[in-house]
Amino acid sequence: MGVLWLLAIYGATFVLYAVLPGRWVEGYVCDAQGRPLRYHLNGLPVFAVVVGGYVALAATGMVAWDVFYVFRFEMLATAIGVGLVFTFAIVLPAPPTGKSLAAELFLGRYENPQRGRVDAKMFLYLVGAVTLELLLLSFAAHHVLLFTWAGSQGIVVYTGLFSFFLVEYLWFERVHLYTYDFVAERVGFKLGWGCLAFYPFFYCVGAWFTAGVADPDPSMLRLVAAVVVFFAGWSLARGANLQKFRFKTRPEATHFGPFAQTAIGDGTRRVLVGGLWGLSRHINYFGEILMASGLAIALAHLGAWLYPLYYVGLLVPRQLDDDRRCATKYGALWAEYQARVPARIIPKIW
Ligand code: NDP
Image (cartoon, rainbow, N blue to C red):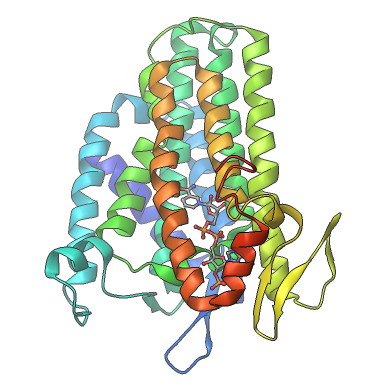
């Protein structure tokens, strides 16, 4: 059954993504002729329909609330298999890039594959978010069924914060067209298998550890700390991403909220050095790590810290790589930014 459930989630998400109305926007990445790629954005309605479908089925007793917890291992195995099949299917028919086949399978060949309304990267991020939300809700439901609402405050706060994270990610879907994944990554195992298997099944690692065990410390202080750390991180990450988005899309604007859009350079070669981007060169990564830490605090289980730890492992090399990329792209301008803002991720520390 887990196989069928996962295929149904992937299938429903794909069909809804392809047919539900949305809005067309221009992205940041350009095609070979220098024209910006166009994207059809409808992530939030797709998410709402699939998650609403699960809630409706569970509320009417047609499926158990914890159905995806019950079938979690079968679903995980299926996701691993589908992710591998997807990798071969998207990489092998594409023209080689000159790297070894192993490197191409891992990193991909196509940069931004699109057909009609369907953009491979947008679909992959969407299906990952939808599957993750369904797992989170089902894992939390399992805990509530075992230990009641009163005994499940940690996982309920965790699921609420994580759901906020996913919904707001889709709300700001357009901003993500301006991120590293769209600019610098190709579609292979890393992105394809990553979004189909790793993202939905690993990001909720804390729930895997805790959905079946009683909360050891249902303290209000811990839950408040979780919410505060999470939203402190969210303010930094979302604030910085929006500030940069505004800087790229409305270069004439002098302010973003309370922050001056202070920049160095001229014309199309300008680097933002003010506001949140003056705190560290990747303050958004620091925000992301704080958000993940807030989620781990909510669960009070050592295993939940694998999630923030994963972000450290992902974002530290990514910062080093992006710094190299920007040094090549911006030259002396980037050296000036590095001198003005020496911290890479954590203000004043590193
Ligand atoms: P950034 O959004 O920081 O994008 C980096 C690019 O932005 C650079 O290559 C450069 O590109 C431009 N840039 C960087 N600094 C400046 C500056 N000071 N002024 C102007 N342009 C600048 O990184 P990511 O795309 O990696 O991350 C985006 C968000 O996604 C972050 O919040 C990150 O934490 C999050 N993320 C989330 C993940 C998750 O699994 N939840 C995974 C990975 C990332 P150019 O100049 O060419 O525009």
